[in-house]
Image: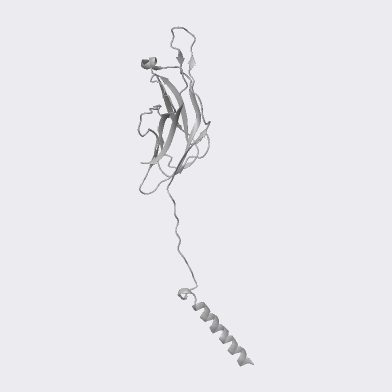
Length: 195
């Protein structure tokens, strides 16, 4: 009986040994490779009030300049953006382009955009905001650059993050004779693009 038990044990050990050796590459480890693909991303959005009206205060004194543009502003819009750059395009920029829906604003008035960078929100290389007052010109072919040097980043989503878009009106005294009472409707389009 001892011989049978020993012989049976020897067969089991040899059988298990052959099974282990039959694995890939005669090893006790296995591996496989995989890739990680990050696609370039460029997204832009405007948060806040959808539409608004800039309406100058009209004076009541005969012979005086009839408009006061002081304090005629709107700062209820925030530009949010997300960017993941690729090796070929190191940075991106955002431009603002003005267009009119129908009658254009008279030469006696200009729409002014003053972008202001938010103090907080988001991560990464959010670029540099041009915080100077920009006279929006509908004849500008590529628009006005408001953010440059954008890398991989995100600003946060919603108001109080990203870029505050402050709109105002400016009176062009030399062209005052072009001003007519009317309702003028304009659109500002923001575009993020590779440099």
